[in-house]
Amino acid sequence: MSKTDFRTASIVTACGAALLAALPVAGGTAAAADLPITKAPPPVADPGSLFWAEIDYLAWTVKGDRPPPLVTTSPAGTPVFAAGVLGAPGTTVLFGDSAVNDGWRSGARLQAGYWFDPHHDKGVEVSFFDLQDASTSFATDSNAHPILGQPNFNVLTNLQEAALVGFPGFITGAVAVNESSRLLGAGALYRQDIGSWAGQRISALIGYRYLHSSDNLSIPVAVNFAGGGLAGALSDTDSFSASSNFHGVDLGLAGEWRQGLWTLDWRGKVALGANFNSAQINGTTTADFGAGVVTVPGGLLALSSNIGSYSQTRFAAVPELALKAGYQIAPRWQITAGYDLLYWTGVQRAGGLIDASINPNLLPLPVPGGPQRPQPMFNTSPLLAQGFSVGVRYGF
Image (cartoon, rainbow, N blue to C red; front, side, top):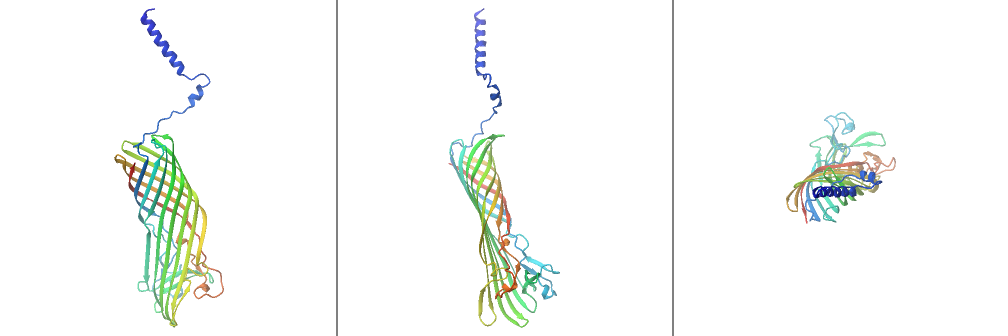
């Protein structure tokens, strides 16, 4: 054998030995074949940034409250017993039985976080958002609508009726309805990288979620009697305030995809916990029929049977979805735009407190007899909030 052949044989033998040494031994082959082929997660945009903060402008729409019919009118010539009565021919609802405060609202969201490692595998974050108050104001009088009423159901006669605010030759008056609504929330999350899929970093989320919703509704009425042998003035106000405070455990997943200077983040969460609902109902009446001004408790829909403060605790769930795109405009700086959707179950709204069934014997000044109506109602409903955001993020 020549030196060249010997050298070639030696190289082949050494390579074969190295290959055999690299192969798994018998009995371990199946286990090795079952191991998944993993790919390293995409690199983070700035591994030197452990702290980050973001501020967003929000443009959201929120499902509005839906109070029952509160103000009605009827055409000229309607008899007094049918004036403003729901279900009577020609009766029109001027306010109520439709959503209020359901338009677009501006707001802001603040977020901040800290990564425990430069690869951004583990971290914590906190957030807070607040939307501007939404308000609705309605007002009319007997000049605009000569026949004007506040519909209700008489539990003594089992018939629909209306408390008249205006009727030609008998009553002139005015009625208004004002309602304001607020929504805000906060949260804290722990984020843990659990792998990658389709070029995305996938993280598990666990934390705490807080939400607050409140409504304040008032119905001031002023009436002047100038006919039927009765002369004087009467004014009353019914007010209903409702609030819901949610506390719960937040669970979810988040994904992050990067391509050059672009990022696309998504997250889906559901918070499970309790709604602490509270209500405040109040009513007053002031009368002046020539013998002096008298103010007594009770209005029309807020009487001795439901005036007071009430509370209730219920299980609730809050699913959330978020999608956000970002573009790095400078080292550590990023501009973002996104979409958010939030669905909150069992929220107490002001309209859900109103019981339109009344016992006339409880009207000021009350006399004995009949059931305790209206009652404090706790008719809850889901709240849907969704909208868009634009913001800026800084890592440091």
